[in-house]
Every structure is written in C-alpha cells, then in structure tokens.
Amino acid sequence: MKHTEIDALVKSWIVDAADKPANPRVQAIVLRLVADLCKAIEDLDISATEFWKGLEYLQEAGKRHELGLIAPGIGLERFLDMRADEADVKAGLTGGTPRAIEGPLYVAGAPESVGFARLDDGTEVDIAETLFMQGTVYDSKGNSLPNAKVEVWHANTKGSYSYFDQTQSAFNLRRTIVTDSQGRYSFQSIMPNGYGCPPDGSTQALLDLLGRHGNRPAHVHFFVTAPGHRKLTTQINIDGDKYLWDDFAFASREGLVPPVKRINDAAELAKRNLKKPFASIDFDINLVEEKPKAASGLVDRIRAAA
Ligand code: MBD
Ligand code: FE
Picture 1 (tube, helix red, strand yellow):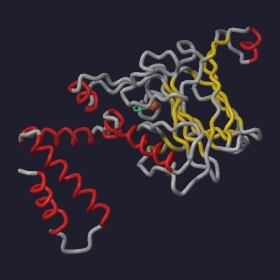
Picture 2 (cartoon, rainbow, N blue to C red; picture 1 turned 90 degrees about the vertical axis):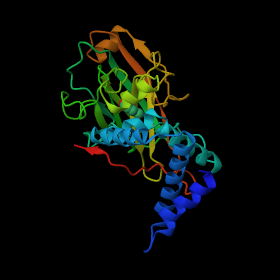
Picture 3 (cartoon, rainbow, N blue to C red; picture 1 turned 90 degrees about the horizontal axis):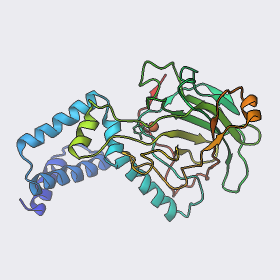
Picture 4 (spheres, protein in one colour; picture 1 turned 120 degrees about the horizontal axis):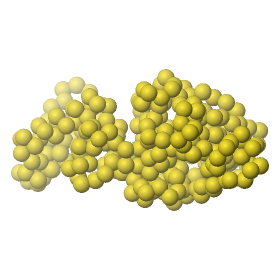
C-alpha cells in the first residue's frame, strides 16, 4: 500500500469514525502514531507473527513495570531532554546546570533535613568507599539560594536502589536536603556502583537482540527546587567509571562529571570520624528562573511514594 493510501485509511478509522466530540490532542497523536506504525508494517513487511510478538513483548514489559526502563534504554527519555534543551536555546535561556534524565527509580517522601544529611544506613560501610558531596545552589545572577530543596538518590554498591530492592532499609541512599542560610547542601554517603538492567527482564531481552549492554555508569540523581525557579532534574556521573561515556540510557553530559578528590589527610579523617580515605565531590548547582516559553521543569508521571 502507498503511504498516501495508508494516511487516508487511518484517517477514516481515527478521525472520520468519530460520532461524538474527540479530544483533539489525543486524536492528532493517535492518528499520527497509527499511521506511522502502519507505514512501518508496510515498509518493513512486518509479519502478523512479528506484530503479535511485539504486542506480547510490551504487555509483558508492562506487567514487569519495565516500560519506564525501556524508554531510557532506547533513547526516548534522552530525546525529551534534547528537545527541552532546544526549547531553552530558542527562549534564550542559558547558563543553568545541565538537565539529565530522571530515570524510573525515584521515590517521593525521603527524610528531610537542613544543610546536611547522611544518606546511607551504614550497612555497606565496610565494603564501600565513603563519599562526601557538597556545594551551593545559586540563582542565575549568582546569588546563593537558601531554602532550596535538594532531593538526592543513588544506588548502593550493587547498583541497586532502595524500595525497588526490598532488601535495603526504607529510604536508604535517598534524602531531601534543604540548603542552609548560605545556600549550601552537603551529604555523607557511600560511593554508588553503576546500575545494570535486570538480566532476566524485558529491557535486557530487547537490548540483547540489539547487541547492546544494559549498564549505566555510577551516578547520583538530583531534583532541585526553589520558589520562582525552574525545577532541575539532573545527575552527576562518577569520573573514571568504565561506562562513563557508554551509558545504556545516554544520560552522560559534559558539565555533569565533577572531579572526585581522594582524601587521606589524618586531620580530615579525624574530623569526620573515619578510619580510611574517602572520596569528596564538589558540585554547585545553578537554577534558572521559570520562563513561559522555555521547557517546563515539571514532568507529570507516576512516581513511587513510600
Ligand atoms: C537508573 O538508575 C537510571 O538512573 C536510569 C535512567 C535508568 C535505569 C536505572
Ligand atoms: Fe539511576
């Protein structure tokens, strides 16, 4: 079938078949997606068996709650970020800390504290490197922002996230830190390891067929919010990780790989009550004002809450 014939046919199903008012946005999107899918079936000669296997795949992935993992794995979550970056450039909005994808593993409701938090529950102190991370949240004019909310979450030494990994304590490696009077946040935690897709899951099955791995470099996620400012969703990657520029979710970005200092000074260790060297990362965060024409920082999606 010719593409023009497909367009006419799909319009008859999706638009002309309406006999009561349609949601115009949904109608336009479904019209486009069904037509594009029919064209792919035509052009690639997708068989009926291949079609039903595809649907079964998505059904199974949904049952396993992996659709939010497939989206970054095939680049779609990164694509949304790239479009938001483009919208910012068009709106003349520059200078903030780069955005990076949220991923599927945020949990709302983490314990909140002012200035400092310890993120880890202590269960991995013997096998993990201790990590300190600190910085200041600034507005676009370079003023520090007291009372900004810095939500942090990251994986443990196995690359697993609390809540999704029920063997971890509640909110392990998840905290909300409110910046102090000088706009500063700091935390003590453990050095995370990179995440790997569940080896027996739907996402990894697809990646295998694509000849790809399902690993991320070690990283730390942030949501940063302050009144009048756009919510920032970002991550920092741990420098030196094998997967730093080979992330299955395509989230690595220049500007989000801060240097990791290794500190072995006796006085610094004593101050922190530590017996072995630790890692320290400085990372300042620059927020921008909310601008109507730029991309919104608010993304409405279902998130876990504990
Ligand atoms: C993660 O930890 C993550 O951050 C993303 C984007 C996808 C899968 C696991
Ligand atoms: Fe992550």
